[in-house]
Image (tube, rainbow, N blue to C red; front, side, top):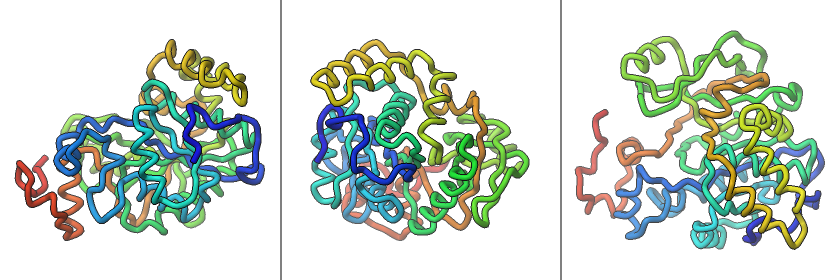
Length: 331
């Protein structure tokens, strides 16, 4: 298991063929909004991606198993925090396979996590295409979901300047999600149309959410496919100080100074949220494709977890001892 502050080298290795599809799994969040529930389930403050909320697999392990339907473990990169390594180690002991682990010394936001992974991947495969997956999602039709990702990867391979998001079909005017308004069709990801992104609406007001819902806007899943080089280029344009610090740290990869360089890079780097600091001002072509016939949910709140369990007809043992009603909370 690759558990160092950085993997042992940034130079190309036997991680896969040049120009391959790689997976980036984001597993560094603190899960503060779900902490009351995960503390009840496990008796500790582990972040939600390491919690077992249904069945016998954590959200991270479910994500890794889902990703493995398309992308092999040796081309899967998990980005986490140093303080989470014991949880990651426990998960990977039973997950099978050996994904790469990138450990961030400090939390500098999702933009830092993604740019770190993009630099690391491009150093190993300068023509890499990357598919990004948060590790706190519920997906029921997993093979169909990964089929959508595969179709997006094929689109990006033919349109290398494009970054393409997966948008979920909304079921209600949710105010806690990010929304994306699609514009004209620009192509096809197999049988699914790809539309240009008109604009983003992050956590709209109730009135705005109702308007977006009625107007055909989509929920932003933050699952997307891009060339690693395109993500780095967008970082240079959108968060130049952060990208520059991570790029300089990459020069020390494979040396005795790589951990020191990463600590230095993160210690003085600004914090940046990927959605707000990069996606909303993305300087390159940006598209969105709708997840069709897929049951998807971002398990960001106790209400969403309980609704997911109710929809599945699941009744885990911990639900019987909840200190609040074991039913979805009305929004």
